[in-house]
Structure formats: structure tokens, C-alpha cells
Image 1 (cartoon, helix red, strand yellow):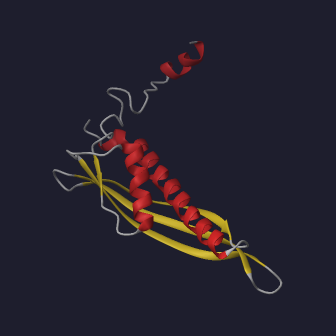
Image 2: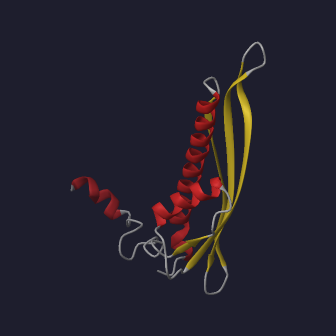
Length: 154
């Protein structure tokens, strides 16, 4: 209990607490439908974190960009490890007014090994892309929570 005193004194309020700045986000954000596997993985994670809505107050749109580059190269120029870089531009708009409430760009990377069989390499690549989309989705949610006190109408 004593550990919570400094937080109470500084005005700390849990983001999802009743009356908290992000309380109105849960089950109120409609994420644009995915158009590919990366989009599906991104939307899946965003809906895990924010919930699915039937009556959206907000709409989240996004644009995904990824690149893959070789990292580990043998003396015979065979690539044994790849790095997948990802960037997402996102915008949260008010469903009633179409006003942009929050926008930003998040980026991260993952990597995978290509030194196994062709089947294991493809599985590793798919896993790396899914992990990347989950990382980026978590960054988007963190940004929305951090800025929600400025735009959330509860």
C-alpha cells in the first residue's frame, strides 16, 4: 500500500480505469479490414488488445510497409538469416465527424533463419512476419493509450 502513495500523490490514474483517459477505447474502435496476411495478423492483434465493436466511436486506418534484407551471408554468398523491417502509418478518426484524432508511424523489425530446410525457412518467415505485426500493433495501442487523454470523449 505504501508503494502506491507516491503514484496517488502525482495524480496517476490507470488508463483503463473508469474515468481514465483510455477507458472509452475498449470495444469502440473499428479497425479497417485487412487486405493481406500481414494486415490480418495486425488486425487480429489490435482486436485482441482493443476488442471488437458493433457500435464504433472510432475508426483506425493503417498502411503497412515491409522490407526484407539479408543479414547472415556465408563465404559462398548464401543468405542464412533475414531481417524483416516493418513500418505502419496509422490514423484514428472520429466515426461521427471523420476528424483525425491521432496519427503516427510505428516501426520495428524481426528476423528469421534461412539455414534449415525450405519448409522450415518458409515457416520461420511466416512466424517472423506475424511477430512483427504483433509488435507494431502493440506500439499502435500504446500510442493510442498515451494520447487518449487529449482526444477521448469517453
